[in-house]
Length: 419
Image (cartoon, rainbow, N blue to C red):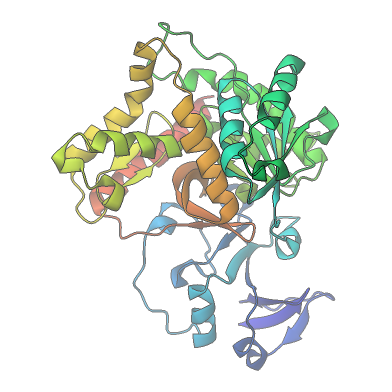
């Protein structure tokens, strides 16, 4: 390996690099270094992330990214020095793809002490999500920016949210800021909650989420271009349905220039995160409590995939059971229709479980459920956001479950390519 110093960070690579700003060093320096380490790669941008946390040895210097990045590996790589193994265990190693024109942004990224969160789309979901963030986010959020084309909604939420206060007044530290369009990307996280084409009660189709794709994509594309023009460095959070497909469209649309050519000067894969799987985990947990054979879901199970068709609920990783998993998957997938059958739209649990709670865990660097970029496809799984990068949970996945994940992965690609 070759070793360099850039901006007081250690750079490691399998190939020699000639750059005036990369200062060569030796392994003796590396052995005593305790900061972040950036492992450089150079692979296709359409199918690989700009950066990610190297949480296991087998993720170091990848030449291809696919679903296998979710699997634990017990192979011991004897060529990796002890000091680097220790850094991997301490989550200090970040893989960095130099094919992205703005790859140096990852090295200079600094996690905010308190986050500025801007929310666009103040309908039922957006308003409920904001309520959750106002109630629970005082310790990690400095401001909540609010924006909607309907200024009456902005005025209403400015008044309502500003008046949510406990006796000690601690929530006053979290400002509510009505926004102008030109201020939308002056933040650390931009949350997209705009939705069009939601079927009315009684007019549901097989998957009410997929029917919203075309309309929501057109609107999302506008904001994606705005983020590109603003050279936005924060997280672009997609809450609108269908989450996974919209994330992929946002990545593609924001990375095209005026000639409609991909130049990867827009949003990086890890900047785009989709928030739809959290409520599926919540729904699975609820229904798992109704049967003895699924009661262990919260302790042993996991949710994977999209917020809708293709969802996978595994009753347990260690004791995977197809029948129990099928039951939980179907109940979670159709739970929204059960709520609609009561005469109401199902937005409270999604706005809080997928939205507010998962966003707060993202900010805090905790494990949560969200969609992220896996080999060119956005797909939901349990992950963390650390140092501006994603760390996916890796598991010893049983073969039957891995096959289901592959089917969902292929389905998401097919659905996107049909649009």
